[in-house]
Amino acid sequence: MPDIKPLVLPLTEASVRTLRAGDLVTLNGDITITAGLPTHRRIVEYMEAGRPLPIDITGDTLFHLGSYSRETEGRFEVLYMNPTTSTRFDSLMPGLIRHYRLRMVGGKGGLAMASTEAMKEVGCVYLSFLGGGCALLSDAIVSVVAVAWDDLISHYRLVRLRVADLGPLVVGIDSHGDSIFEQCSRTAEARLPEIARALDAERGRRMG
Amino acid sequence: MPVTYEQVKAVAAQLYGSALKKVPEDTKAALVRAHAAETSPVARSVLSMMIASARRAEEADRHLCSDAGIPTYFVKIGTAVTLQGNIRQAISDGFDHLVATIQPPILKHVTNPLTLERGHKGRSMPLVSFDLVDGADYLEIVCSPKGLGAGRWAALEIFSFPTLDVIERYVMDCVLKAGSQHCPPVVIGVGIGGTFDVCAKLAKQASLRPFGLINPEPILADMEARLLDAVNKTGFGPMGTGGDTTALAVHVDYAASHGFVPVAVCFNCWINRRAGARLYDDGRIETFE
Image (cartoon, rainbow over all chains, first blue to last red; front, side, top):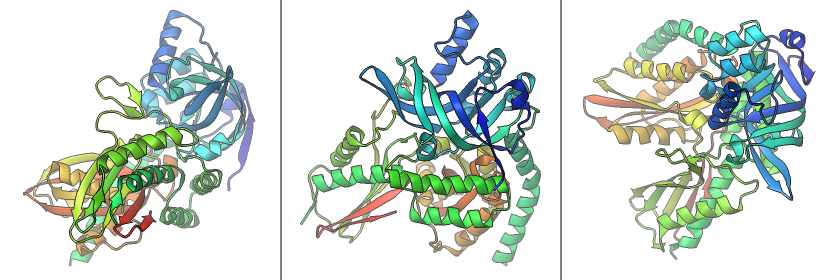
């Protein structure tokens, strides 16, 4: 098992820049999450109007995690959380990463190269969470710091959570322009002709 | 003794609940085998987390994924079984009961495609399809809570007199397009032939086939083996962060077709949600994964 780096949030730009694609980390501290496209659009509206967000994400985190939150006796509790597909937010993330100088983003499946470029500029990494990891990831929730925009359905809300030992998470894209996702796609494309030849050879052998 | 509305309602709820919380035994075993065989340290870590997550969800009675999916049931009615009451309604009511009672509660993922409004139900939900099994004395229900993180990468194309290499190349194109996105290692279902609709259903049902069964069609048994090998050479790996394990299984089914042959490809993510039961005429209920 590779070393797992425990990180305490918030991170400085310098410490983010020490992380490399393929590193394993755990998070300790406060994170901000949402799984909603309407939420991202609303953040963009606030950003463009110069309005402060109800939960400040400047120099902080924005993870593509959906959560089940409910209000009982005037307090929110979060029962579970789990990553969602980040590429749904591809068109909006570069702008958000640059404007809020995000230090960490994440979810599952990675982000497109335009986000990798923005992450390189500001000093930000993408963390890959375990899809289907709901039970494990939810164990890391220590408390609910804030829930904003509760007019939206649960997993679209902007939620700030205190977490301990959240992970391990894989650094999928680092702040030096290296994206495991991009690398995997390029590798698979490059291997495809050879894979197709092997399929042909095996088929020929079996079919005589 | 007939199979009753009450039985079907209870089974429809139970299957959905167990599919949300338990990775099938064959899939857990496949993850353990993959972990032992992986050469990438990061991939081994991710597979370890998957194995731990499956265990944790089971022991804590929690969901594996926050996406409870869209409710899908495949029903096979034996012609020798007697039914009592409204069976389609029983499945729908069973799903409603699940939504009302399951702990922890499930999120709203069913979406009205015309308004994008989300809820637990909607038009045609749950999706239920029926088939007949001549002579069988049971009603079979297979439940597939279909999350769209993997489901969205399904594809279908109609080819003109395709040779096997064209079909296999199409499967690989779909795999490359899905890339790191569908929570690999996945189960890949492939349908070949029939018509547009039948082909998609063949692929979907192939994806729900238990592991380890040898395809009775030798041409397809061979195709499954070489495609699994080919997919795992791509290197996407667990959660798409690199490794040797991109798929746990490739299952292919076919139907006769016109010379214009549809080929459908679909994916089930690593938690491989599926749960089934047979309700017999004599009152027995057998569950399976």
